[in-house]
Image (cartoon, rainbow, N blue to C red; front, side, top):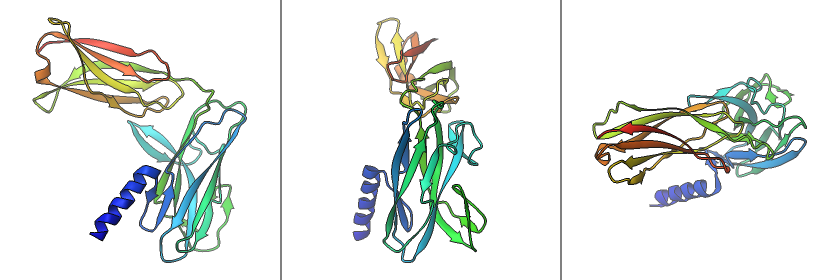
Length: 267
């Protein structure tokens, strides 16, 4: 019974306070969102606590990532044009914690006066196994340290003055369904602006005979600038009872105009 109580407590705390708990240490928060304008400096903190029973050395290391078909793929720091390498600093980035000891890391973003674009990356925090004497070059771990990453922190930086919110519907078609009771309508939504978006994409069914309009549940997915994401929207076949139109509705907020596309359907 105590096990289940403790498990429930950890689960609730993780949900409420954006905490990531590993086997022997915890990190919070696991998402950092900066919105510093050009020429500004912003600072946030990361809390790490060692729950293990021995002294442990930890490292905090910045990585880039690319978004491939909706999946974030890790990349070497500085390898993408959205890298935070030139703007983000972590102090300290190597530290030791005694059992039950904790620490707050400072994460500082400094934005040059001429940079208005959105940038992103990961901070990996985890045990660093010491093999021999080590040195640091900026924030990169040099020879002598073997990193065992455990917890990733998602970091984004997008100036408040950057208001380049925009996405488009690239296509809208009905595709074959693997489930007999469903009809599937597919679209690709492209973020052609410079802000990270999470648009609402849903269908509406208009019946010619009765002029009835039925709004259906939709999907939300995060779309990074330059990325195109596929949405498969499903309708129960029994719902389409007569000839009409299926409208695709794209709403990405920020006072933008709702976009749409329409195709005609038969039962």
